[in-house]
Image 1 (tube, helix red, strand yellow):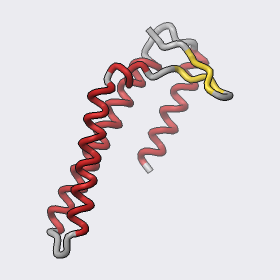
Image 2 (cartoon, rainbow, N blue to C red):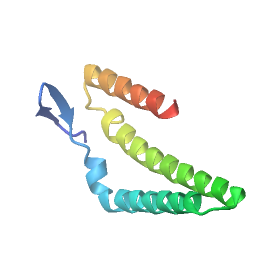
Image 3 (cartoon, rainbow, N blue to C red):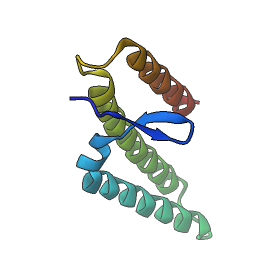
Image 4 (tube, helix red, strand yellow):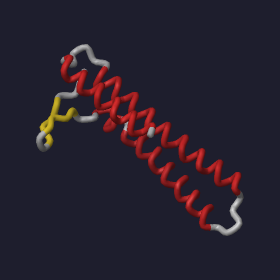
Length: 107
């Protein structure tokens, strides 16, 4: 079942029900990312920090962000593009939005 559009400003947007449904899980991921970023900041602030430990921490932050992106993207695709009842014009708009977000993310 697709989420009906909502009028916001000059544009119609469909509510992201998948982010509401998985809100606790997504917030847990964001908090973990925040903790990893703070640990990275602390490691960079320490004089004589271990370069290998920094690289591992950077990789951990990147992996956590990639996991968050994948989860939200999958939910968006399933909810906003996967339904049989989505009008073709809306589907085209949603595909364009996903493509734009992916291009921005992959820069």
